[in-house]
Image (tube, rainbow, N blue to C red; front, side, top):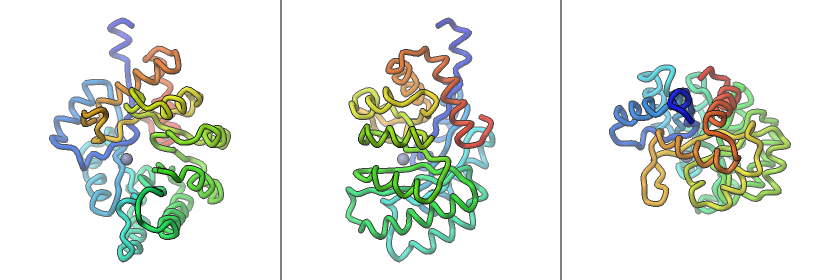
Length: 253
Ligand SMILES: [Zn+2]
């Protein structure tokens, strides 16, 4: 890989919680310098969604907001307020996320499913792609998005069952890779099995991987692991996954 090619590396971080990062200005500069040409900032609730829209406004053509309602943030008494807020503000977002089901938390499954289905109806109505969180709930999440007829679906940080992954690929959905590829066998297996045409790169910043807090520039780490696992050079993987992200989000990154 010569210098020229390295300068041509252009990657998209398709999943970052920018509102949770310290020294954001510096973080964004470092990302740009590393070859990051776009960041999808995912929201988790009203306050976080508002911040993402604001950060995106301050960084046009670089940060793109997704608004969501993370299962961890759901409180029964706030559900309707959150759902109406999302519907009223969806025009400001390129996608709906982070949304999904988390069966490891205490919140009742019925409540999570109710919120998830309502959000998918918004995605359908406004033709927005969805960014999904699943924990011990992959099968159910898959069944619901399929049933709701959602076309643009991204299973973020996929490390679920491999037989379900085959159905996810078959349905034309995408999965995203994180720096956890350094150590997570289920995540590695998923990336090995998925065609490069269906893979997006991300960091899930500021998640800590092996004790180190991630920021969007670390999407280059994800890029390098995906390249290794797929046996492809980093240049072609960056080009392909950026094209995938453009296709999925309908954005010209
Ligand atoms: Zn996340």
